[in-house]
Image 1 (cartoon, one colour):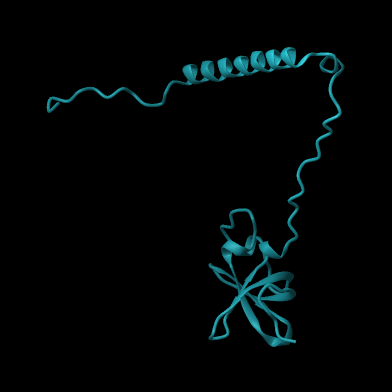
Image 2 (tube, rainbow, N blue to C red):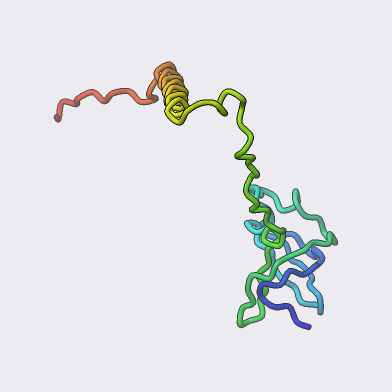
Length: 138
């Protein structure tokens, strides 16, 4: 059965270039994984991530009219978009007995403290740019 767009198949790395890697697919077809489709991380050298004869899972991104097959290793990996589980029922003992107004007041106080800390850091660091002086042409 020929490969189809959207399919995830296993292939073998047959060649490595500056711009990607060639992958031997089932039925003797060959496709290219562009360097940008190798990893979520920045890939400077393909050889740091792939080796010749390595088996990899790839997703078929496209097949051109000329038969060129575009592949992705990065998109073949299952995505874990599960949100972080938060136990909303779990609060510290003090908050259990606080009124809404008290909780809001506490939040505002903590928020203002954080703002003050950020402002003091910025003032210590400086704005990073000097004020422009007027030129004679102004």
